[in-house]
Image (cartoon, rainbow, N blue to C red):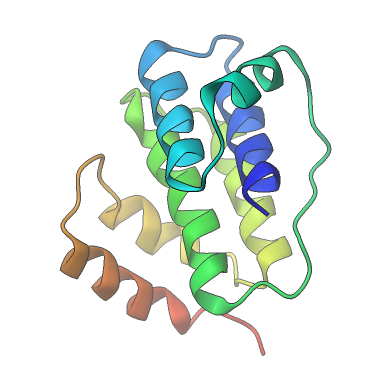
Length: 130
C-alpha cells in the first residue's frame, strides 16, 4: 500500500514538469514513515505510474492518501489546475465527493498539529460516499 501512495505522490509532483527539492523530501519522508527506504523510492522518480488505488482502504487510510496529496500540492506554494484535477480524480476514486477538495484546499498546510489534522479528518468524513 505504501508504494501505491508514493507512486501517486510522485505522479502529482511530476505534473508541473519538475520535482522540487521540498517535494522530493516530502515524498522521502512519507516513504520513511511507511518503512520504505530512499533507495527504493529514488528510482520511482524516473518513471510514470498508473493511477492505482488499493481496494479495501479504511477511511483513515483514504484520508491519509488525499491529505498527503493536497499537502504535497501546496508545499511549493504554487497551485496548478492539473494538480487540482489530479487530486480531485484521486479523491473521487477514493470515494469522496468532489466538494472535499474545497475543505482540503482551505485547511491543509505544510505543518499541522495532530489535533488540526484529526479535526480535518472528521470534517472530510461527511464527503465519503457509502
